[in-house]
Image 1 (tube, rainbow, N blue to C red):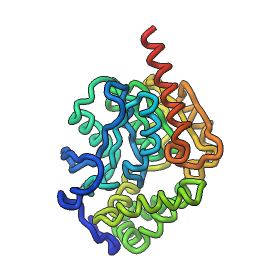
Image 2: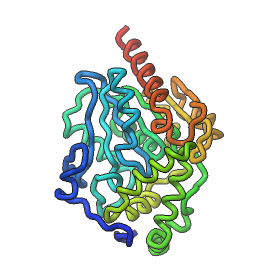
Image 3: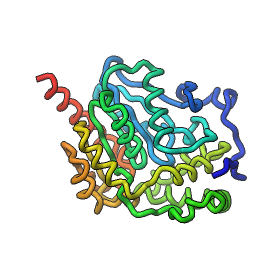
Length: 299
């Protein structure tokens, strides 16, 4: 799909616009990445891989809860999201895996990390684990994409660059807002989420990044990715919101049989975005799982 800037995108990301934004910025091979490395010094590091639309602020509640449990966190906005660059290249899993690997290397994070992925970020996390298995101590997937029916434009639309570009320009923001409305149960939290995401979508190239990702990161038909991840032997934790409307709970048993996680938990009264909706419970599950794994390896 040809790069474009939508009519609503009235800002540009550059050093001047980033000067007053929170967090840190680093230039990697594909562009500038917005990140935050925070939490207790010397603690085990959890790398947080976000989903299709969300910026790093999505992780704030979970990061705070993990910090109280002694876990250090590295969160970043994937290219095209938040305040990371809108790159003029293909938005595929290889791009996002490369971003995580280069960021980890640039920040000098040694040793295996606890990798956490949500929604599309779970697919990125699994792809990262396949390429860099020795750097992943545990893998946590929350409401993973890959086994769902499509809720967004079908493949026959996205397969045609000209048609995909037309849909993106004409209906892109409406489709984005509709997608965001299905993610969480609480209306007040849904409004905050939408405001958080749409603020960053005022930057030029955001809708292009969203639709190009839909073209090149399949969100269904990924059973083999789950199966191959299970074959890696990396200790895995699977979390799912009981009321998930994006990656419905009826996919849980299939995901569990393919991934073969050591632990699996359903979070009650929770929609698609468990790390955002139930940060305390998700943090407790992750910290207990990683501590248990560390104890087993030490004994």
